[in-house]
Length: 174
Image 1: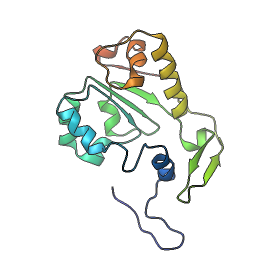
Image 2: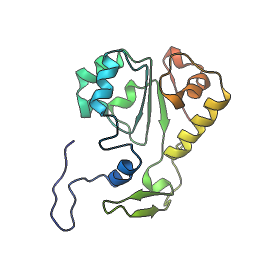
Image 3: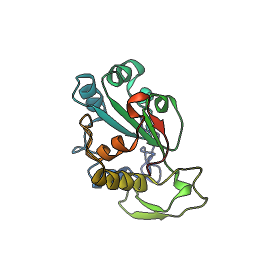
Image 4: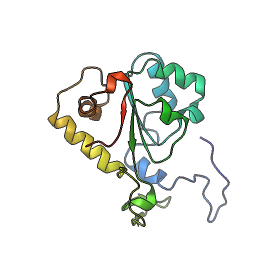
């Protein structure tokens, strides 16, 4: 990962506002799955569904490597607020809000939890990331299981989108 400039006083090289929070929850750091390894596992046929939160995998891991993986993945879901090349590769696009469109928290580099407040209403049908994940989990509990999904929370989503096998469908979870 490319880091920015830093000093020993105020400026941190990691410009992501919630890196400390993702490490504390196990979503980042030594205990977390490595993104390149996940892509390699997809190339090897070990992953059938991939749910990507906001990242352009082409920019991060290279176009050829990611395209090779995508050719083997049955279901690709993109959840995010910005449009980029990887969004076009997804079977399902779940629009999420930006930080100014939601209430929430982040954990800064000093491990202090900081509150953020909604400034503007969400654009279109976008929802907060946790609202989308929660809605998918609720659907998973009530809808039939689909056999080709590997990600635990995606099972309900697959059944919810009737056009999934025919090129996907863009829209909200519920």
